Length: 133
Image (cartoon, rainbow, N blue to C red; front, side, top):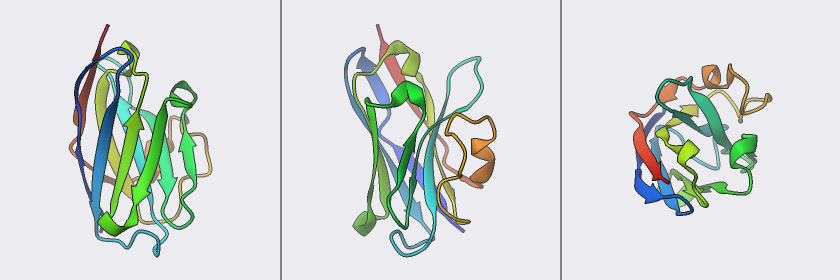
């Protein structure tokens, strides 16, 4: 079973940057066919998919609202995945969750699809990101 733990949240001004990390265990990144996804949930809103990276070939996917600002990457040696967030906006404020699936690559549906999270059975506890205006 895959386990994930997030870190790196915090408070930043609009236009600033933050880097989130997801430490994963229970699989071999680069060898096994796993995927790591980032999700977020703002107060009063539904959880939404942000980004995903496939372990085997490194393919990456983003929801439209973060394209060009967020970058997901993996460090196979450390079994970790990072989410570099630049040009942050107040609307990026949310609890960010890392999630993993051991059943294949990133789902073949849009990251913004309301069922995207259903493909990920392993979840971290979340980390708060607050962007002030």
